[in-house]
Each structure stands twice: as structure tokens, then as C-alpha cells.
Amino acid sequence: MFKLNRQTIDKTLTIEGLHCNGCAKRVENAFLKLKQVKEITVSYETGIAKLSLKKDLTHDEINQVIEDLGFTLKSVE
Image 1 (cartoon, helix red, strand yellow):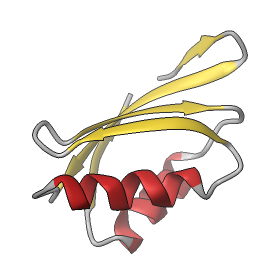
Image 2 (cartoon, helix red, strand yellow; image 1 turned 90 degrees about the vertical axis):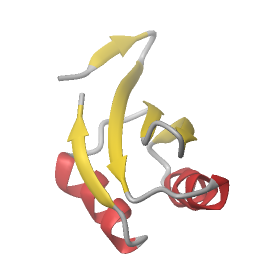
Image 3 (cartoon, helix red, strand yellow; image 1 turned 120 degrees about the vertical axis):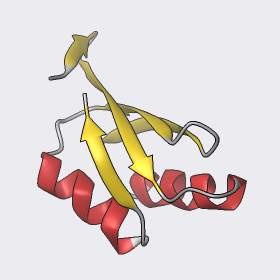
Image 4 (tube, helix red, strand yellow; image 1 turned 180 degrees about the vertical axis):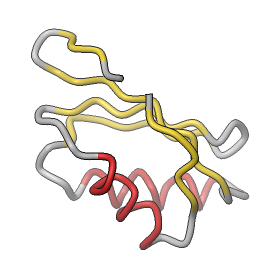
């Protein structure tokens, strides 16, 4: 479900509803406000977000951030 790498947890999110770079930046900014997040990159073209965490986030916590922005979380790997 997640990969442990040098004390970080890497997750790949599939997000539906990203239409432009502004959408991707909104997702990045929302996650960067969380203390558990080390870094995130989001591609609106593919709908993929690569998330590196200092501490794990639950599926529900991730989903809440995505839904609050008006997008749909399709999967977390």
C-alpha cells in the first residue's frame, strides 16, 4: 500500500477532476499545509499526485483534503 524510503512514506494518488495547472497547485498547497507532508508534486494532465510523507496520513485524511477542494480521490497506492 505504501513504500517506506529513508523514513519517508511515498504514496501515489489518482485524482479526478483536475483541469489545469491551477487545480494542481491548489492540491499541492492544501497538502503542504499539513505537517505530515514532506513534498508533493501533482500533474493535472495525468491526474497523478506523488506524495512524500514524514508521518503517514490515512486514506480518510487524504480523501478529505481532496474532497474539500472539489475533486475526487480515485485511488491511493
